[in-house]
Image 1 (tube, helix red, strand yellow):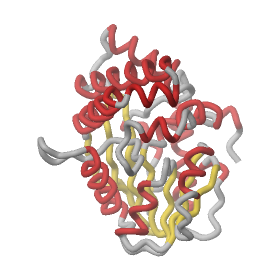
Image 2 (cartoon, one colour; image 1 turned 135 degrees about the horizontal axis):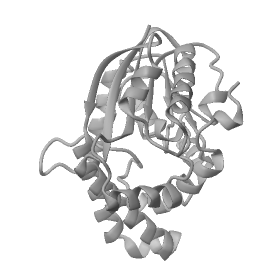
Image 3 (tube, helix red, strand yellow; image 1 turned 135 degrees about the vertical axis):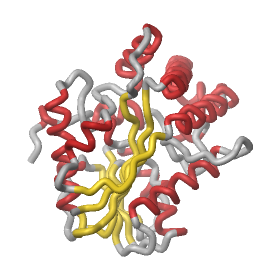
Length: 288
């Protein structure tokens, strides 16, 4: 059992962000409520298509299509879960989240193929090994801002050990995560980072690619890694455009201070991804 001092973002910190209001998020996310980087194809592509394409891509990376049981770690509002059972022939998906609001949203779909648990991955005990796993936008919350690198790697190692325990031999896993960039932060970048840590994602810190690779050694074989930071800049731009277009509704739902904070956060994110201060990794791994 992982001690509380060795865990990343607490349930309270996760809820600070994700439990603002389901309706608030629906005012600027796409209709599937997918809150992660899309996979863009052309100049005239739309947000909804980019999100669907991303889910299909991660399904392919993980080999989840047509499987009996798939694990979604950090399932959000369930868009990956829903598409797996509706379009990819998966019989059952278990989703883990620390957000009660997200869990209720999934439960309200009333689909017996979808099982959602408000549970930390560290406390999850599978009743049987899964055929595949997908984790999107969760790894960023598994360590706390300010931890030394060795402690971060140890935390990621425990995560990969849990995934290894939860998957059948040879099973695939797709991992999508924001990562620290290799371009040094300028003064604005530093201000942006501190704002996001203090006001948007408390107790969270994205990994470096080397930390992920180190932590997964001898547990998973890395099949592929791509850095799609330009895709995340475009996704954040689409979200910002929708938030500003629906500002009146968003303000009624969450208040002017929250809307202003999210506009600042999205503008900062666009800049960070464009400049290489932040990366977006999509990684294919196979359990050894």
